[in-house]
Amino acid sequence: MLSVFVSVTAIVFCLALTTASAFAQTLKTIRDRGVINCGVSQGVIGFSAPSDKGDWAGFDVDFCRALASAIFDDASKVKFLPLAANDRFQALQSGKIDILSRNSTWTISREVDLGLEFSAVTFYDGQGFMVRRKRGVTSALDLGGSKVCVQTGTTTELNLNDYFNTNGMKYEVISTALVGEAEKAYDSGRCDVFTTDASALHSERLKMAVPSDHVILPDVISKEPLGPVVRQGDEKWLNIVKWTHFAMVNAEELGVSSVTIDEALKSNKPDVKRLVGTEGNFGEQLGLTKDWVVRILKHVGNYSEVYERNVGVKSRLGVPRGLNQLWTRGGIMYAPPLR
Ligand SMILES: N[C@@H](CCC(=O)N[C@@H](CS)C(=O)NCC(=O)O)C(=O)O
Image 1 (cartoon, rainbow, N blue to C red):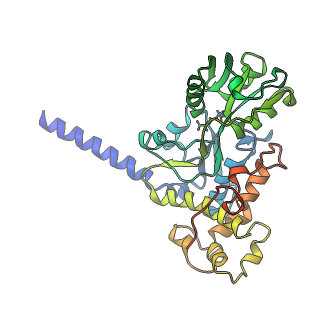
Image 2: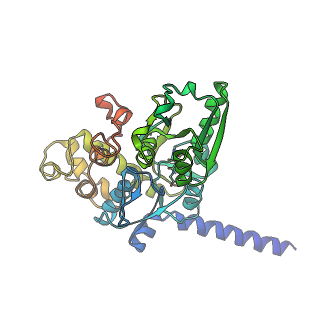
Image 3: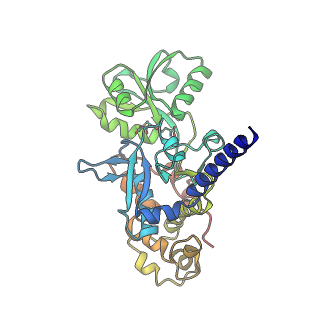
């Protein structure tokens, strides 16, 4: 009896060790495989959506392309795996993906309960509401008695509950597992309110039969700090993910972009030299190469380039920088220094 117990314990222990060490080598696994497995949404225009030809584009997509640039000097070495809200964290826990770059909100339970780690906030967002223009509503506090469409497995459904209950407003939830179903339910009139992160509401509005028939209310009812997520237990990979974002923000702050990178390589400024690797060896310390940031900037660009291309005021989405503006320009986007 005792020996059975001992061997079962040993097997369980070994399995646990194997799983832990398999996941502790994410960079090596990626290098051996030749591509990053990047979990994205199933289609949020501006963040991660496939074109008709199946090419993925968006802010979250570009983050994985930046990682592929740093690792492989090739932004195309990414396999995008579209995931519904309900499935995303399990896909990361099980090792199906190396990173989740999918409009996911940083919360305590997703770290301490799910064993995951948010690397940085790449997009400061908040929850908003979209309604039909003809309804004439101007404040979220006037939404009592509404039928509200929301996707399950999101912070959105939890905040919705808090907000309506706290304000003593009645509502009916129409929750769906797939965003496409929520869109249809709202557009066909089964719900009179659609709620999600404000940035994603801009994307949802574009998908409506007549986008201009819908307005996004000015109220923001929550904090939704969005960012890439990895598994706990692989500090090396976490550092690469985290410092890729910080490098892109620092590059913007220093005026180094895909356009000015060649000039930056000749710069005498100490902080620019550290960024582009003409001084120091941070890239190598990360397990990458000296020119890791140069690769990111050449293939993908700095934070501002990525923002403007995908979600900025001149893009289809038209979302102003707002909180995501650099701290030096009135926003809260702030990256620790490369030194
Ligand atoms: N930021 C929130 C909401 C994220 C979320 O999943 N939003 C939905 C509604 S726009 C979405 O992205 N759906 C796309 C999909 O399921 O592929 C969270 O992390 O829970």
